Length: 285
Image (cartoon, rainbow, N blue to C red):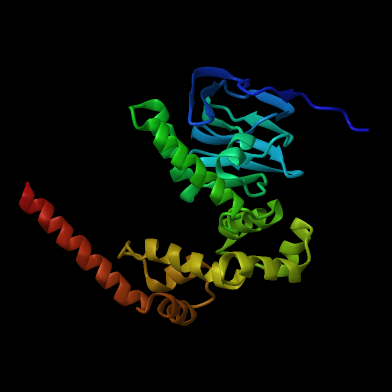
């Protein structure tokens, strides 16, 4: 049998609690963690949401590990085991414990809920709104908190966004593509690196992003090119090579396919906008 991990009672959180409060069936905590703090593997009796307000930490769960930066949200169902490691700066989190049995009694039902981790998006916006009600309560805050909480639970129960509920290996592939989009990427090499078959990678990436890995690489290259084209002193051939294209014609064709303009036309448009902005600023001074 595996070693049993501690299960924290409702109202008990690790870290320095700055403030706690109850509202509409929730117990909320504003918590500060010192740099490089490690929370050994544990679980919570209550389900809870955690919004990262400041700092960066890594969490081990899902039999994998993911990073939480500012505005990241994690939802844990009751009893979900996890461990946490803070980075080299203080971390501040807003933690909302939820009594799911009370929700079921109130609403007659509650959808099955699974652990999920999201970076920004609708769930983060809802959590930020709940934090604002917690930080600056007024006579309507209890009603607002109840509404926000039910929306959050419904979002998680419906599965959220497939992009945000992806497995760790798919997130790793996204990191690889973002880091190496200017290089020549080979699907079999990526597959070997993450330990997943090429066919599964292709299917999962397209299902999540509605485009292939190659299309994503081209999109990132053109996004990078748009930034480089703002420098009018850089030749188009040089921009093409910096973006990872073998030659300027290939670069120009791909750029027009994705933007509807040639690189030269885009540069003219950006340059004219910059000049107009400069004239307005000069006139204003």
